[in-house]
Image (cartoon, rainbow, N blue to C red):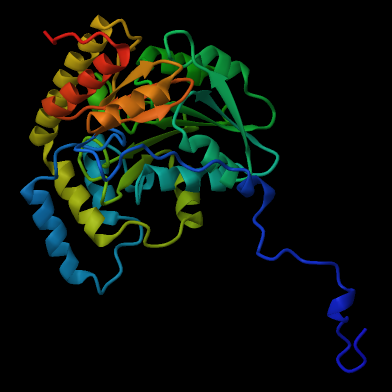
Amino acid sequence: MSTTTGIPDGSLLPPRPRLPVPRPEIAALPLYSRALGLGTTTWVASSNESSVPPSKVVQDAMAASAAGLNRYPSLYGDELVDAIGRRLGLSDEQVTAGAGSLPLLQQLLTAYTGPGTEVVHAWRSYEAYPILIGVAGASSVGVALDSGHRHRLDAMAAAITERTKAVIVCNPNNPTGTTVTHDELLRFLSRVPRDVLVVLDEAYREFSQPERDETSLLPTFPNLVILRTFSKAYGLAGARAGYLTAAPEIIRNLRASAPPFGLSRVAEAGAVAAWAEEELLSATVAAVVAERQFLTRELRIRGLDVPESGGNFVWIAMERAGELEQACVRHRVSVRAFDGDGVRVTIGGRPATQAVLDAVDSYLGAPRGTE
């Protein structure tokens, strides 16, 4: 003990780490994967971005909003929330906006899960789920997909325990592209206890061209939360804007626990303008769906396992995914490989599609022409 300050002599204290140490569950988290060849390839088919930039109307709206960057944005993306609510028939208390659907999911998990709780989700599904669940301090419970690369909703319902606080359904599923039908979702919701959140992640819903909007289920199932984004079909991945719809009680809790001013003025202006361009959205989706059908057919002709996709991407199920990814990079196109499971290819223009097919032919060792 120091005789002058009363502070213990440092030489008597146990040795300390040389750097600050995170929580053990954070230290154990995997990093979000990165595709090969980024920055060196001609075509990027690895991140499920739109290959088409936003319209001039959207760009002009974003540029005009920059004149007010000395001021904070609205607290909860008020103008965007109002526009979304009016079209979907929801009140402002049923919608909240944020910097993409992923931060909104993180807010949700932070508010409703935590140490000692579990979150059930399909696997393989979006690779960020186990990371976000771990950050919240909860345990990730992955339920294997079926042989057709689809959610096994009955098995997911059976995996719910006393510790389960949330279940995530990715529809269409990333990275396999497979979809859950409205009737399947309805049966699943009927089986889930009302004190368990059901998080429906619809980042790619526009490309599945659904006949029904699942927000119609919110009054019947107050534990349902729906996530959507402007990063994919609306072409605003670089702006970061998304929204969440749920019961007013859930929205209030999210707003109470969220950092203020979560959606930038520029992103909100772009999202509001893009939301109004319904005809352009339809044309964009139609072009992606047509190219997706072409690529799916060509890959199946080559004998590959490619499930029907409802996203702006296709999934090639294969164990040696890394080898195909390397072949694609050699043909100047980046894709996303999940070694042991498969390769995800984002839909772009025909030159990018042809580069992928050339890479596949090279990998298979038997070049064939396309129809």
